[in-house]
Image (cartoon, rainbow, N blue to C red; front, top):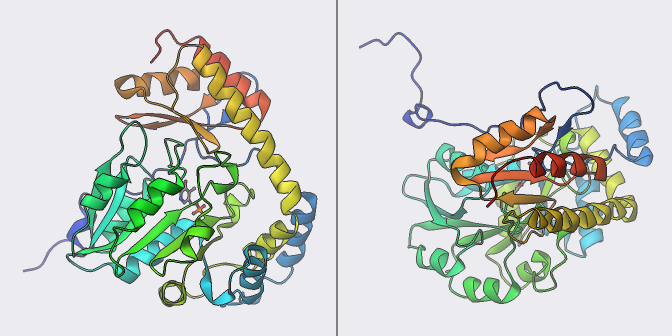
Length: 358
Ligand SMILES: *Cc1c(COP(=O)(O)O)cnc(C)c1O
């Protein structure tokens, strides 16, 4: 039997790929893109200079082992270089991890709603998603532990959780990890760790240290402001880091990204001052939103979550008309990135003129 088009895996038939955040519609005056949790600040001059100089060598392949970057990460976080692996953003590493465990029958547990890449990367890796509903916008770790079977190969714990902003506490995480079998990998996705201020929320690097089946995913995209260059890293024990290296596409982290990431670690104090400004703005935005009568869960990230349910699309359109682009997650709610004060004020003004509250 011949078919009139090339044949692909059935999983692609219902496939919904990643939908990036929209840019604002053109409007009078300044517009604001609050859809992608990016840093609102331009790259630091010191980082820009390194990027420009790395550009002069792009006729050469990058260092496939990213040795200098891995050493810089290992030194900065006081972990062995053999515990570090890098990838094309932390989403690239998530894909490599799923590639390393995925086979028919393998189960991947994650909270839902959470990072939208988890479901489709799990599908692509030939594994089965086991989503566990959030409770009050937070991970339900006891329910996630109960969802583990002998087929569970990987569990994502996204903390702070994208898109709801809530983070898991140390006590919750310890109780959970004590129930996970040693052959099942737990990935703490800490894309927003630099924005955490709640002292009850642990640093994943202190958690992974004593647990061979725990790994931490981090990125240069958000707090370090390198989203356009695509570089993230994993810290995990040697077999985990080795699996990530084996599943890496050759030369996946380009030379400009490697150089810029090293420069960003060198400039970290300056970058963290910017993070501090965003944290202050986050607390102000949540406070003012609550003052306007909205329900906004606590957030430890650089965004706020509005559980608007069936009014989500209308609210997004309302903000868009005011030149502020925010991200719908239908049918649950809307995520709004916290940026610089002018952008946040534009959002708060738009929200204030929306008639309904939750
Ligand atoms: C933004 C984000 C990432 C990945 O970002 P990269 O740009 O691929 O490094 C990973 N996890 C979560 C939860 C995110 O929100």
